[in-house]
Length: 532
Ligand SMILES: *[C@@H]1O[C@H](CO)[C@@H](O)[C@H](O)[C@H]1NC(C)=O
Ligand SMILES: *[C@@H]1O[C@H](CO)[C@@H](O)[C@H](O)[C@H]1NC(C)=O
Ligand SMILES: *[C@@H]1O[C@H](CO)[C@@H](O)[C@H](O)[C@H]1NC(C)=O
Ligand SMILES: *[C@@H]1O[C@H](CO)[C@@H](O)[C@H](O)[C@H]1NC(C)=O
Ligand SMILES: *[C@@H]1O[C@H](CO)[C@@H](O)[C@H](O)[C@H]1NC(C)=O
Ligand SMILES: *[C@@H]1O[C@H](CO)[C@@H](O)[C@H](O)[C@H]1NC(C)=O
Ligand SMILES: *[C@@H]1O[C@H](CO)[C@@H](O)[C@H](O)[C@H]1NC(C)=O
Ligand SMILES: *[C@@H]1O[C@H](CO)[C@@H](O)[C@H](O)[C@H]1NC(C)=O
Ligand SMILES: *[C@@H]1O[C@H](CO)[C@@H](O)[C@H](O)[C@H]1NC(C)=O
Image (cartoon, rainbow, N blue to C red; front, side, top):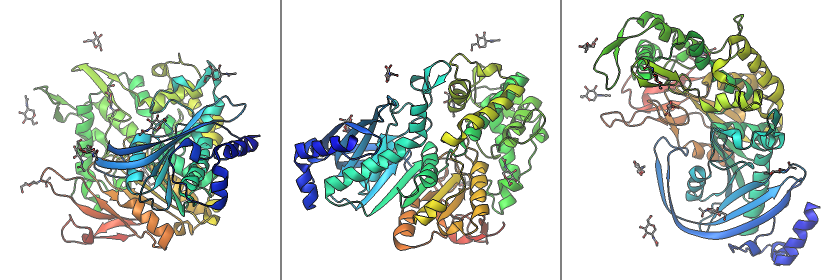
């Protein structure tokens, strides 16, 4: 059905004969670009228009720094389609460089509940000469934390089609549509296809490797929200502990604890650089600093660290446990900000409330409880245990993104790089270690096609005091196209208060960047070894 429709439209637009002759159309009009064929879908519309001299300021696109991109010229193609019977309507946006196409195609990822970050990721890809695609997954574009517009068809009833689209299906579709439109526009298919995403975009990259293993030759998946059904519920844990204790410390108190922990564990990796590169060796106990003074900005008075704040910090670092003490999930590393998962806000000193990370609380409310009126603040420990189990029981096969069997990806010849900031305040980095170790347990040679690089001191996707992997996309391209194995990534810090930028290699797990002596600001003072 969909095929007939596509063919008749091709004939109508006259583009079929061009495609058959293999001529380069390079015409940025809807009439010149045939409807892509997509099994299981009906294309509703296709529009195309030329965009010239576009500028964009990107806060997060494979860079520690904001990137300012100017002078982009591209063909902007939007394809709208539905999966008949599912009542969804998905918009796929493609940007095709008008000049200097590098022969490559890129799928770009989303963040939180947004299937795409379109305007954050597309300009970066196009500026490097890629044709690039982003999909809204059938949801309102750019809505990161509030799934209320699409999660439920009615209270109690999940919108399974849109959840599946977000989790996986729309990502596969976008790759197929994106490659077809790229091929039609340039008259030849992309030579290589890449995925680039962080957070939800990182999860999506792993979903592509696990479920659609031949769509992308190279996958860059940073700080991946994999093992979603555990990890997202685990993100609520520090709030649960605060609710149970009934104390909500101000962020300046948590910051004092974080600074004490960082000072205590900084040198366990051999270098005093304000970064905990060996979090597994850090056993700092916050009860040691109970009673220590700290000052909050703007308040001239000194406070002292409370035992409740120490208890909450320890819980946030340990991660969730069942009421009978069994492990549920990992915690934060000790140099990560508490403002992500143990966030609080204070209307006056001493009068603070918990501010749950909204992705986590809305996952529990809308998907596990399926009840917009569910009050997460009233949750007991026992109820939380149950919600943790139910999240996995009901959703692991849809969005868990935790299958360690990458045989099909390996067989397809794919290459994948993960990196994860160890000071990530949102997605617990030990989840990524855990996943990678499970991949290695199944395939001890997985490093031949899949490498994981922990990035000490880097916060969620970017930021923080640590070593961001600059040029990581180029490392992936070199691996895919020239067989240059990424033995290390090049890590770079943001400038410190004196403007000094420090560099160190990022090493593939299980190796770590051990200090050899010399200037701690230069990469050659470090070497990848099995221990610090
Ligand atoms: C392109 O946009 C910049 C501003 O971003 C402007 O200064 C420049 O004149 C524009 N160039 C052309 C050719 O329109
Ligand atoms: C990009 O622009 C912002 C302000 O718009 C500026 O703060 C930032 O430093 C610029 N980044 C670069 C790499 O020039
Ligand atoms: C691309 O086209 C779509 C659909 O017409 C439009 O909504 C979007 O704003 C366009 N993007 C740019 C950057 O012009
Ligand atoms: C299809 O979705 C639209 C909104 O996207 C909604 O108004 C309509 O009720 C849905 N139809 C069915 C049969 O579910
Ligand atoms: C992460 O895993 C390491 C190694 O198993 C362990 O030593 C460490 O305590 C874990 N950290 C967190 C925050 O869960
Ligand atoms: C707060 O404590 C610091 C160090 O503990 C001390 O230097 C400072 O004088 C104190 N300020 C006040 C207002 O008590
Ligand atoms: C913490 O909560 C405040 C108040 O709701 C909010 O403005 C801020 O963005 C939150 N911080 C983070 C890191 O989410
Ligand atoms: C705490 O703040 C809330 C508003 O956020 C206010 O209603 C309440 O009266 C305050 N309580 C005290 C004891 O100041
Ligand atoms: C910046 O330079 C000053 C003076 O050399 C030094 O005391 C300070 O420790 C430096 N700060 C950092 C963050 O390196």
